[in-house]
Length: 90
Image (cartoon, rainbow, N blue to C red; front, side, top):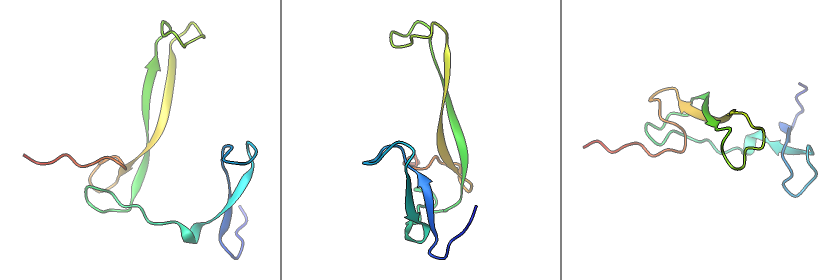
């Protein structure tokens, strides 16, 4: 990947007021840090939630069970999923 001087990195963004697959330049230096709501750490691992849609589900037209995945981030320090509120200690 080529780096340019202004740190703008073209990132494919799905159809947000543009054409599908159109690359929109984001300046990485403008990114706001996001910390864990549990411990404040800014380091995360990529993780996947996995689910199964039954072959019997009304919207499942495949006739087969379908496995799906969604990406999420897990705090390296405390293990809390990003965007989740920490559980209150009782």
